[in-house]
Amino acid sequence: MNLSNEVKVTRVMNAVAAGTGDTQTGTHVDMQGFDGVVFIATFGTLTATAVTKLHAEQGNASNDSDMADLAGTEMAIADTASNKVLVLDIYRPAERYVRPLITRATANAVINGIYAIQYGPRAYPTAQDTSVAGTELHVSPAEGIA
Image (tube, rainbow, N blue to C red; front, side, top):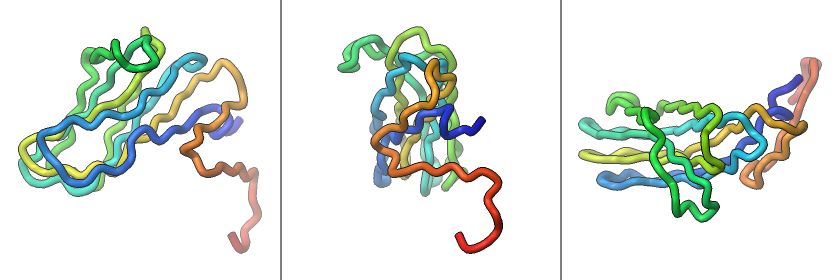
């Protein structure tokens, strides 16, 4: 068993420069064939008084036209938590497509990106998304030059 064959990793949001008063929307992931998805939102500098939150939406339309907020998924990151992450786990969503959103208000917040890790696949091994440049598995590697 190794994690790289049992999850699918996708970068669903690139870095976004400091900003405020907006919503940044990640690309949806297709949950067909997976039990859950973990969104890992990474942040840079959060200015004092920044109000920055992560939440998720779901829908059945591949064009995102029916996306709706998932109740209770909103997480806030403290303005003192620069260079930290938020981790949001959505297990068995009721609809096929799920995406993350970050809202920013009051003061500047830098978003370094969001990664989605889909887990509980119905087929093994999983194929990685095209946003992944490569994966390697090393079983009991010997010490030496990397």
